[in-house]
Amino acid sequence: MERWLKRDQWIVALAAGAVTLLAAAYTVFGVGMQMSALEMTRMARPVGEPMPMGPGRGWTAGYALLVFLMWWVMMVAMMIPSAAPTLLLYTALKRTGPDAARAAWLCGVFLFGYLACWAVFSALATGLQWLLSASPLMNAPMMSLHGKGMAGAVLLLAGLYQFSPLKQACLRHCRAPAQFLARHHRPGAGGALGLGLRHGVYCLGCCWALMALLFVGGIMNLWWVAGLAVWVLVEKAAPHGVWLTLAGGAVLILWGGWLLLAG
Image 1 (cartoon, rainbow, N blue to C red):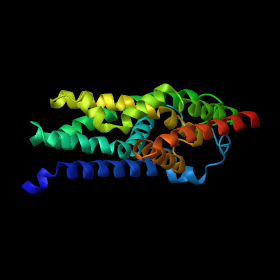
Image 2: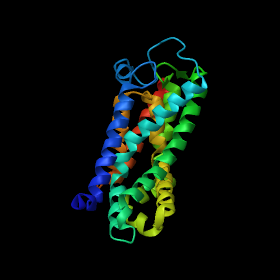
Image 3: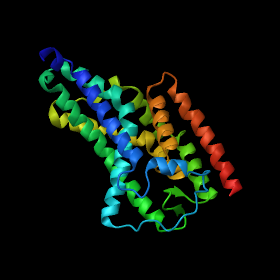
Image 4: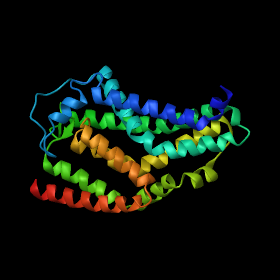
């Protein structure tokens, strides 16, 4: 047992993996939604042309809470893999210092702060979805934008953001976890929480525009969910991931421009 408890990185890695798998399962089965993500994925149509359906479920406070949980759990499943290198490095750092006895617990506090930032994003995304669902701009049952022009505009803006100084600055922090921890590390639970919140803010600055693309392909379209999760992971972790940022931005701009012209 002592040998196992000393392997905090394994504990953190297994815990993060378990949380990711549970969040992925929650997303796939669409808990509380009208249809599961599997059904929505099978019914998906080309961008901007969702399947015509009825008005969809009416929004209530309870349904808004379910949609918020859907967004947040989906963000957990998509973002923890790309945050794992920082989590594990933070655990190793704690293991060699005065907080060695509670390294795994402090890593949990760090992760809580990180996911709290994505909870804020999920609340904003829920509000935007609620607003759009009451307009002709969105197919509410399929949870995707209606019309090539609207979809093209979002793709174009997301592509332009890939080249922005803010995106590049946030991406540099996410790609250099050792430098990030050396610069911002603070002791104790308060330091762990603050560090997690700070890392979450950088991650939001890096990825919010990519997450907005879920409105284009379908919020519960598993192909888009998985594709964007892999994109984020490669951007942050691959040796030449920064080139994906630029190449992907160019593709999004061209795709968005083409849809705007076609619309």
